[in-house]
Length: 168
Image (cartoon, rainbow, N blue to C red; front, top):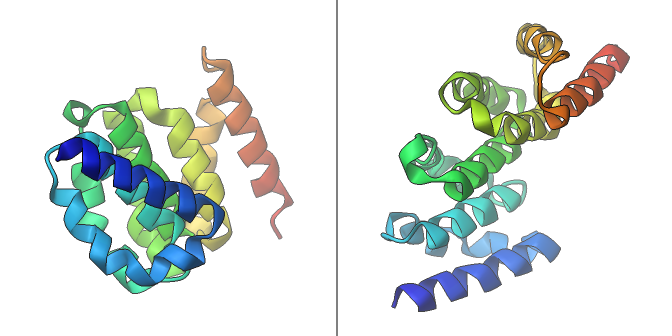
């Protein structure tokens, strides 16, 4: 049964990547999948819900706590990455959503530092909705990543700093 669920979740995720507005009306039917034992189903569905958040924000916001529970290291990289992506999509909905998401991503920088590239990607998705206080905090992190040993983190930092510096 787990292979069937994971297979169905993959198909739904692929449809959502191309036409999220087709999947969005059905998000409430997908949320029970976040309770399934296999991580594959969870990561595809949380990613799907994130991608569809713009079209069904109410249901997307309802699974916030589930996404938070997917962040600890014991959950594995794929589930963590999908939850982190979800947060970027949620943070992009509004300034108040961004305020709710920012501390979660900020904490993830410290608790799962190996996921920093994905965290920075999520900040890039939501940066337009971030207030000045959170922009300043993000700027501090980005400055500290300028000499990071990983080129991907340096590159994300440079791109985000450029966007911040262009904001009025």
